[in-house]
Image 1 (tube, rainbow, N blue to C red):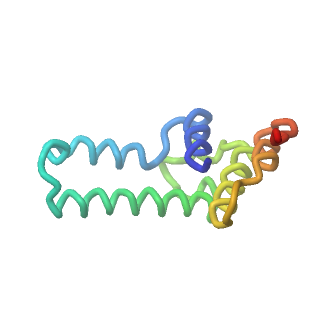
Image 2: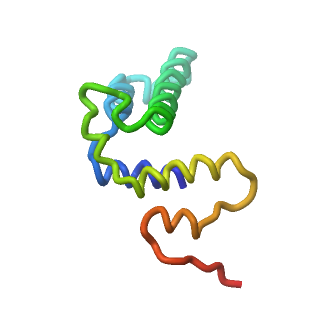
Length: 115
């Protein structure tokens, strides 16, 4: 669900910081067609780590925390911010997420499970 939240952020504010990092990784062909050497795994692991750290920084320190070049992120609506934070908290818990609470963060009505 958190991935959905990041897709929604992209739809609202545009490019996210890690898009350029991922694009650079993808441009570094021929790794995409070569064997799985250790260099490839290290490079992919480093980019994944940078993306994870950027997401944590945005959620922990605020949408303006990445500074110059990313000012547009400060326009993330409070509802979407709340949704992402709730998704992060739900991921730490066992069981199904509280879909009604998540829907409310996005301005949705009440959600009832059939059954």
